[in-house]
Length: 249
Image (cartoon, rainbow, N blue to C red; front, side, top):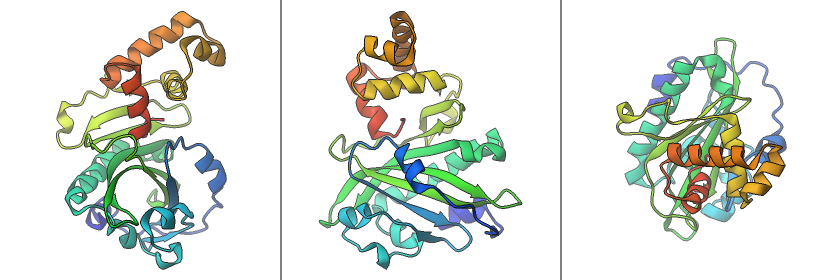
C-alpha cells in the first residue's frame, strides 16, 4: 500500500495550515449498517489520528497504541493485500481522469477482510474521502471509515465504487482486475438515482419515496428500473443489501 501511495504522490506533501475538520458532520453523512470506526491519515508522515472508539471494539487494540497507517494495514488479510493495493490504484487513476480539483468530491469504496478481536477475519467495507490538499494539489489528509459487514455477506465481489458528492455523478461496481471491461457510461448513477437508492435501502416503498422526494410514483418506478439495470442486481432485496455492503450510499 505504501508503495502504491509513493507512486501516486512521489513528493512528500507539505501540510501547511490544516483547516479544522468537522468529524461529526462528515461521519453523520455516512450510511453504515453495522459496527464501524473512522480515523484520519496525514500523508506528510503517514500518521493516523482521531481514531474512534469502535476500533478497539472491533480489533481488540487500544486506539492509543496506533499511530501509523502501517499499524492498521497489518490487520488486512494477507490474501487481500494485492486487491487493496490494486483498488487504490484504480481509485486514484479514476480521480486523475476527472481532474484533481474534484478529488474532494468523491468517496471511494471497496471491501476486504480485516483481523478482528477474536483472532479471525471478517469482511469490512472501506470508505475513504480526501479532506485537504496542499498548495501543489497533493493529498494531505483523508478520512477512512471501516464497517463490519460480515452479518450481511462474507463474499467479496472484488469491485470498487466512486460515490459522487456535491452533485457529482457516481460510478458503482467497477472491476478492479480488468478495468477495460467497465463502461463508465453504463455504470454512472445520477444524484437523484443515489437519493432513490438510499431510500430503498432504508426500506421505503415506491409511494413513500415519491412523497419524500416530491416526485411522481411513475418517476420513482423509472428510477428503480434504471438503478436495477445499472447495478446488475436481480431484485430490490439484492439491491438494498449490496448498496449497504458495498458502500454505495
